[in-house]
Length: 167
Image (tube, rainbow, N blue to C red; front, side, top):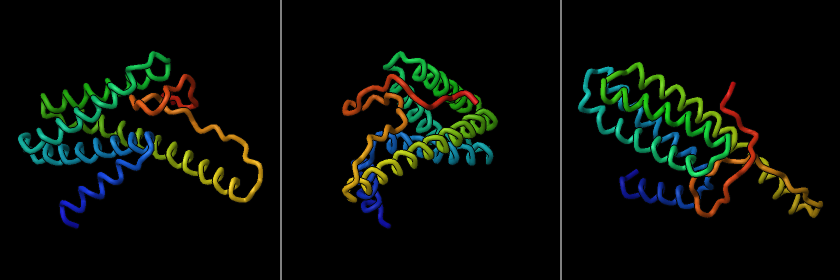
């Protein structure tokens, strides 16, 4: 696949994605760049690790900005979580510390799994609603899991949620 066609595909994917799918894509991007930086740090090449580490810092910073706008308990917990990850990646960059980067990446992996489950649940709920509507049966309103406000002007902030960051 050429660079131009890859960029067009990515632009199309982003333009048509829902807000929760976009958030998942951000997490996946942070992990991808983090893995590149981790490999470079393990080789002892801090110069090669600098650019991907800055990309991870930028992505996590954007995710943090997205949840700091609301003062709900959930958003404060998520903001604390992203702040912790942000600090770990920044410390990894400043100190060329693979262990701190690996810790942050482990948390991002867990976050990706959580968001993937949420995206799958929302998609399956939408599919069930569509099939009920096309069958002519009365459709009950399915409440999808509330997503934290991610700064999207087209999506209203959520005041309640079924998600918890606590184990």
